[in-house]
Image (tube, rainbow, N blue to C red; front, side, top):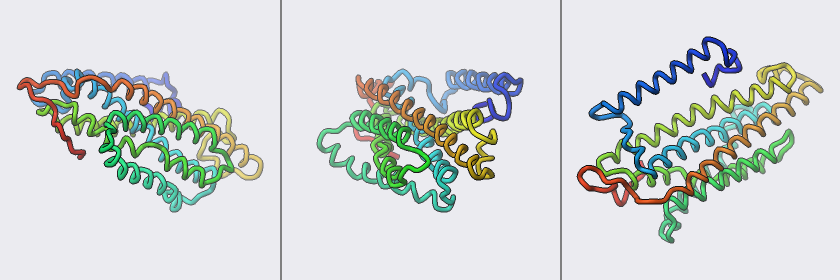
Length: 279
């Protein structure tokens, strides 16, 4: 639905409406089955714990935003800047450096009193700022070192792993494993939806304002038409990055609500594991 709607098929077409109905039906059947299964894949009782609800939501948003940053920066480099696909991946090295540096610093910061909640609030706010910088500075001639620097400071390193620890600390002991796999499920779901939705936004914006009517036609344009197409593509990319900034701002607001008891009691009166280990 998110991939075809508005591009290959009209939003009101029978096929897209049928996909909407199929998705809603499948979700209803999934919830019905989880309520009755003796060992559900995703126990709905987890959503009674506030930290788990918020952790799952933030992880889904993070999945969408990370895919937005990675995928559309690569597309921008290839389409607007002419970087070869074999070389574009190297521009993500600063992002990997930032993730690694944040991971190395998390230990000393934790020893100084930083909690998983603190990392989550700081990481989501930093990521929102990085997306805002990408949206305002990315243009046809932007310094590629500036793009690299913004990816270094994207804040994702403060979130990867910390959200798992947060969920593990809040999950009832007998549901620790399924809570851990659950948060990975929501990240994967966010990845898929983020790519499809942001891709649709970019394609529709370019089709409305760019020459050729389709992003794929940009590579065949020359001269003034090529320049007009690149500017239209960059404008659409900036909107996508603003969307990423909005998502991470929403995640920051959710992160601020991460308060309350560490875990819900299970039927045996146990609590979540006091020292969880990220998978």
